[in-house]
Every structure is written in structure tokens, then in C-alpha cells.
Image 1 (cartoon, rainbow over the protein chains, first blue to last red):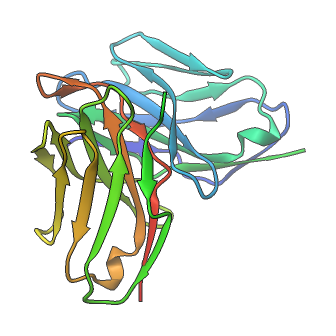
Image 2 (tube, rainbow over the protein chains, first blue to last red; image 1 turned 45 degrees about the vertical axis):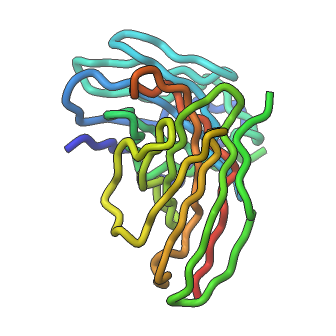
Length: 110
Length: 115
């Protein structure tokens, strides 16, 4: 069945460092892909999305490109801030439901 | 524009009891999906409601049931609570056209603890 695999965390970075969180997926067809972010004690917020191959989603300095050939949707940011500390979830849409990865916790130190 | 809201925020129940969680969808949305997020895990799809009918269900037993109302708000009911039902329950709303749903937007969740 459809699935999403994320790199395991936690990831600890210093402020202004570069971030990459790997995400790969298995799916029949061509699902839409998403990154959601969850701050402590809160629900999920949509960070960015891409609906077809080669689309690039971007928001708040974060980017991810839908790569059909490698079935990947890696999240990147050039310079992280302390306020980016959160858990990041990669997800795909399959038949109307979202299938999530296990989440990657990011901790950014000043 | 009002976002997705959920109530209550926290809930403590004992094993065997029943619980009802509520969700108000974002303005203009007609579809509600429910997810269970265990501690340290990604959310798992429970079911989805589109125009008051169930429109897909995940791998959850029948004691998990739901409703959607004409104003598109929704309830999640869980009977015969078990300890493993302790989790954050997330509601997400979206706009579907012909049962094909667009991006889902999440509420803040209800934290359920079963003792």
C-alpha cells in the first residue's frame, strides 16, 4: 500500500545552519505531497504542498520539490531559526486521506 | 475566516467509557476527516465525511464512529474506551468537489487520556 518514509530525528542544528529533511514515498498513481509542521502542544499546520511532478512548494523560506523519478519530496531551508523548532511531517494524499510519515523533530539552538 | 476548531481541548476518561469529540470545519469547506495521533507518531486516518456521509475509513474498529451535520461540523464517537485510545485526535476540513478533496487544514486537536 501507499506509504511515506522520513529520516529519523531528532535533528539538532545551530541557528542559520542549512536544513534538509528527507522524505520518500511509495504510491500508486501520482499523489499530491505535503509538508505539515507541528509545534509543541498544537495541531498540524500546512507548510507547503506540490500536486504534480517537478512542482516546487515553498513557504516561509522552506522548499520541497516533487521528484517522481526518485519518489522523493525532501524539505529544505537555507538558514534555520530557533522559531523553526518543531516536528515536521511529510504526507501524501491517497483517495482523499492523508498518509503521514513518522515525523522528524527539529531542534534549533541559538 | 474562521479556522477549524475542536472541543474539548483535553479529556480524561476511564476504560470502558464512551466519549464524543467535536469539530467545526473551516468556512466554505464541506468535508471533515478525523485522525488519531499517538505520542511520537504520525497521524493515522480514522474516517472522512463528505456531505453527511462516510467517504472512506481507515483501519479502526467499529467502536469508532462519526457524524457530519448539515452545517458540515462533525463528531467523533468512541465506545468502550481502551487504554490504547489515549492519543491526540485531530480533525481536518477541506473542500471536496465530487468526493475529490483538496488540501486538508487541521484543528488544534483534542488530547484524550484513558485511565
